[in-house]
Length: 206
Image (cartoon, rainbow, N blue to C red; front, side, top):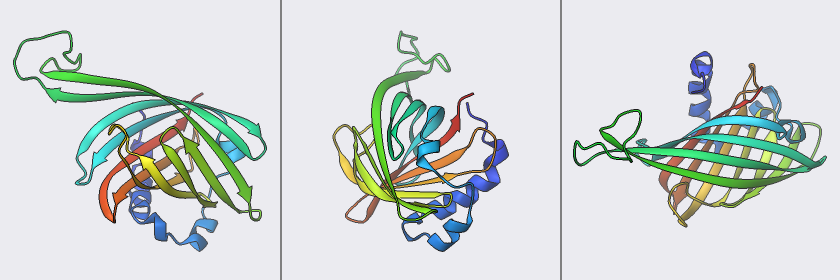
């Protein structure tokens, strides 16, 4: 488990901003730090705790994500993700079988492991702003970054929903603190109807 306690007040503030990050105040973002610099940020090993929520905010799934990033050039690179997801559902009977969760034998554990490759490119407009593109097995996103805010959008497969795709808006803030903490949110919608949200809290691994 990642320790969120020390960042909880700041996380609440940033979540309220990310809820509508498509209309975020970029002038305000330029003033915030620490700045996201992709060629320095997307490098090395990182660990994330991921949660998937439905349109009503109910928890659907959680996962540990292990990421290792390399920089191919000064303006491009790639990241390899290993995702270990667990979904717990109550058992129909009290019998304990091989699929019982070690945390609680009254529940089935539906485990899922995935691997994902994410590639990114950046093009600087000036010293503080840039356009950015992400592409991975689930789709491609493009947008911009300024200060501590990164915002991209595009069509993307919904985590844990097979081949179903929707419009995604991804927001990420680099936070002050040890391990370069950052909060990432993905909001999914179809024809303007909110479908759900994915949140990841990332830390650099020592």
